[in-house]
Length: 152
Image 1 (cartoon, rainbow, N blue to C red):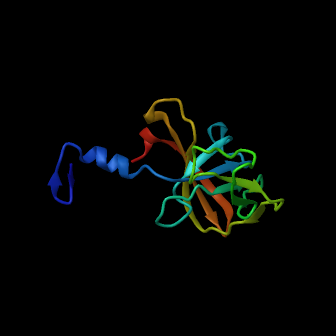
Image 2: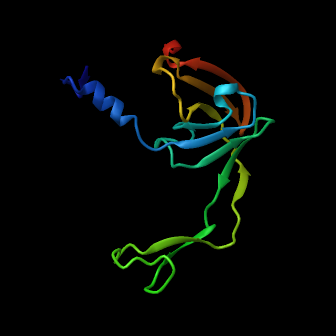
């Protein structure tokens, strides 16, 4: 294998490592199959960056929603004497404190194909299932389930 015209025995490892990184979470109440009923992951929703650890939900009707927890907690510095203050952490005495604001669930009007996969697959790589989903204006149009070994 070559990278940039240079062959190296580490090339497959480098390509594999470059595909690792952040992703988004998807939970589905739509009947996609047993393997996709729990937490799933994807790198396909957000263009070009792979994912930002955002959370999405597919409703029983097939509508895609973004679950937004932004601004639900404040990042505050703990002072000496505050509960949870640790003197050995001189510059790292901070904590997220819930502020009473609730998160929002809002429709995500995505038009594209995305691939999701189960979060904690215990089987062999060749049998790891993918679910390719087609959304139009945030509504699931169709889906196809393949295993990694079946993909061409």
